[in-house]
Length: 159
Image (cartoon, rainbow, N blue to C red; front, side):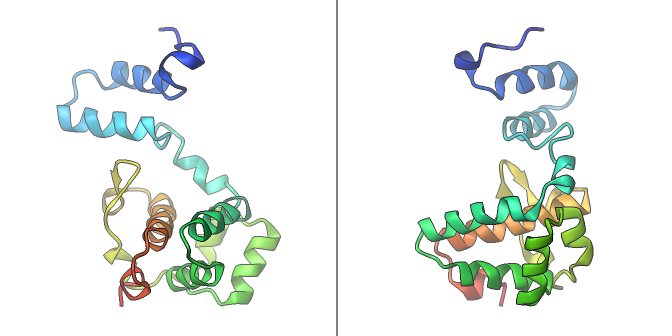
């Protein structure tokens, strides 16, 4: 199977087409979910690459996202600290040392209310993600999304 030209169907179309071949014979619900995941770039190895990604590389993107929506970096830090149990110094240390998400969450003490974080990120229910690290990263993504969407801090922090 040839990959579509870049301008034809979008960059993710090749992944989706290959995934169609792989998932042939699966139930429709399973196929639909896997195709959605591939379209978001979060399946067939993409999610496992999260473990090697630097938190410092993603953090400025989180800051931009929340500030664009009228929230502050301090609020973002509060959300991260709630999820991970880090103090400000711990968070700074991870950002300056270039910790990967794997190292970041290995050092974290996940909030006991983290399993209350539910919903869909990129077509995937966060509560259904099997890999613990990927689920923690998606918990963080979900919290950042909620903050950016203007949810009250008490609701974002599951208080």
